[in-house]
Amino acid sequence: MNKPVALITLASLAMTAALGLNASHTAASPSSSAPPSGSITVSAAASLTDVFPMIATAFMKRYPGTSVKFNFAGSSTLVQQVIAGAPVDVLATASEPTMSKAVKVGFVGRPLLFAKNSMAIAMPAGNPAKISTLSSLNRSGLLVAVCAVSVPCGTAARDLLMRNSVSVRPVTLELDVRAVLAKVIAGEVDAGIVYVTDVKSVGSKVSSIAIPSELNVTTTYSIATVNESGNSTAAQAFVDYVRFTTSAQGIMRAYGFAKPW
Image 1: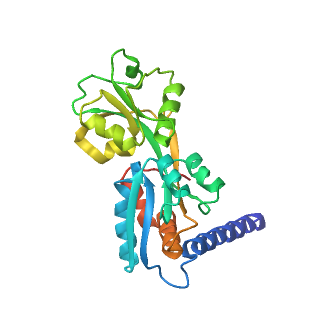
Image 2 (image 1 turned 120 degrees about the vertical axis):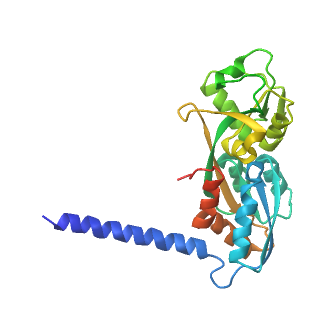
Image 3 (image 1 turned 180 degrees about the horizontal axis):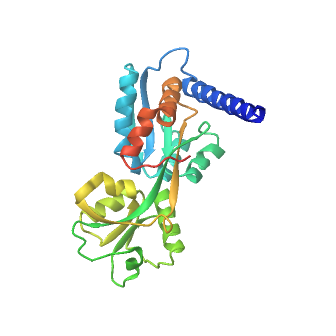
């Protein structure tokens, strides 16, 4: 009677060990033979502006001989820059489809998923337009900012509005989510559709409305090394650090990003 249970237990242990070995191998390659060193440039989605420098600080503490520089912009812009030959070592985008464009033309290595985000409505502090729900954005005369659909935050905003049958005529279409957030903070618009992490990052500078999960949409972040990197060892080490370490993933959680798995 106990044999089936024992077999299942052994199989489970074997699979766990195999997964552990696979993760360890991935995290160590290709820098297992020597610790990473030198400088790398990471092109990352604008919504990672606050969290990635914190992760880089932890990374450089673990690998004292390294230095990490950043280039933050809309994901689509970053992909175009990489394809155009920008001197970048790592690419991190706010959606899988955006990263796929770089993969298809052979400019990056195998992407890894490392975070997930969802949408929120941000208003100027005090919410002068008295917006209370997502459907409030239907109201005539409201000034609403969103990202252009060519970038992940715009695609997500479009999908969010369509999913909830909300009709909005934006007064501006921005090329990254931080541009939308800046217009909200400045009071140039009544509301903007941004990521929940953007709202968290600025605290009391904005008012916000959380969107229930059953009504919301999500986007998944990808990270990969750039094939023409001038420092492939450090680039791979950074990618592995972001995806596989509890330190980096803990920082992602602290900044409001969810697990993608």
